Image 1 (cartoon, helix red, strand yellow):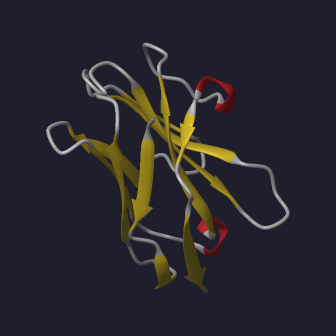
Image 2 (image 1 turned 180 degrees about the vertical axis):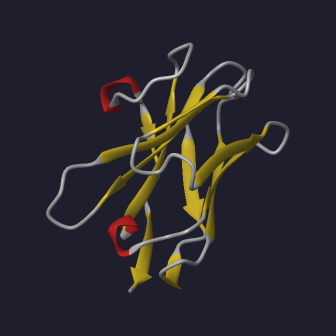
Length: 124
């Protein structure tokens, strides 16, 4: 089985930064795609960013481009999301996910494994 554990969420003021981590354990991730999604209260889950585990290619949702950066530490089986210039609209539960699909994807249905989520709250 695969486990994904997020950490790094919390309360931050608007304009501030946070870095989320997602540690993967269980099966190896030699060629899987990883992603971050978020869900704000009363809204559907939204794609944030995705990265190929081996190649390092990335893609971002329009609302976070230029502010968020996704990365991974391959040997540590850990993925990160650096979030800068945060606004109240970034307040949400952030989830990391893993997909066996080869190549980047922003579709929830392509992701098989999900973490439990970490809360990010941005005060204005």
